[in-house]
Length: 391
Ligand code: RFL
Ligand code: PHB
Image 1 (cartoon, helix red, strand yellow):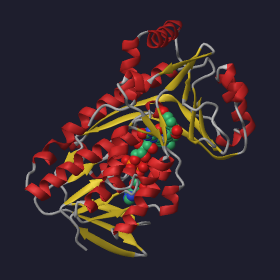
Image 2: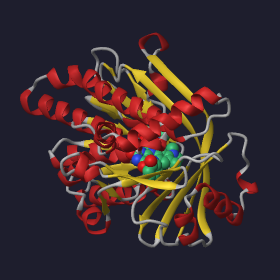
Image 3: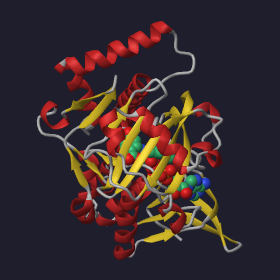
Image 4: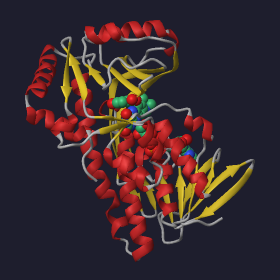
């Protein structure tokens, strides 16, 4: 089989780049080792920046997102038993975020891809990017139903997430990685109960961080900071609700509606960047190249900005026969990535309780929160990063 762009990974990065390419008439194949149902069963991101929304529109996949997504003009930072609202809309001159689950976004992109008749291969085993470093055209091999297949292509988009094969295929000496592991995780649940507040609440509490998010006005997504050795089976719903309630200001805790959860998982927190993001004909996109802790809600949105830069570069290549965009992809993407890595690290540091915090560190955290909620300049810096830096 031959295609122009072989896309490894059918998460948001792979589907979005695939859909933009298909709409521009650039033939591509998406390959994933998992099944469609497995991918749609993963509960992850929930906050979309305006740039991500714009890209979904460009991919003609935004109709349901506009109909069902919730525009949010602000969120709360809760500490010392009080809420401090960050007025995203007012501080950024009219920008907002949209609450729409990654699962739904993925669903919409899969539907549009199917409608467009573009090829996706699920449950592809041993996907391997080959010959992407030299002058010969690259290809990808995979196994399906015991048969090995080969897809010849011009380019490979490595959209296969943090544990994917693309980054691992790059010789060690050609890649540099940067990593920070945080000494805690997030225990998250999904439940069909109305959220405690119509906006998100990020809470800093002596017992640890808590986040009240949502998927709709009848479905809540809640997280609490937990230690890394926590066993999920030891967290009954009741124990989770009790712990969450303790970490929230009284007016939220009192209003909280509880109910059975239908998803419960623990996610470790990590910052990770691989440089560069291009290896001749292989491009790393999204989580394959970088991971951020979820505190700043940036992971999916960074995947979207990478997709934007890569799509523009491929368009320039196929339409104008110019390599300029491909040559600058890595530098452009990384410049935005590092700013989001910094923001996510900063939000994480400010909102969580670290096991080894000294009295000095604690006072600095309190001063930071006090400054942020009393200085318009400081709040503006937070708001402009939260709604997303331009791309
Ligand atoms: P994905 O979504 O991991 O998709 C990669 C796909 O590649 C496939 N794959 C392979 N296919 C073939 N061969 C292989 N060897 C393969 N290895 C892997 C996988 O099956 C999968 O389908 O990466 P992508 O597309 O780059 O998307 C990135 C986002 O998923 C991620 O950044 C976000 O979910 C992060 N994130 C958040 N981001 C936000 O922007 N806002 C948020 O509010 C937000 N909250 C979150 C989050 C991530 C979380 N977790 C669990 C990590 C909350 C959580 C709890
Ligand atoms: C979510 O709704 O899953 C969510 C929202 C905000 C974050 C992280 C996750 O910062």
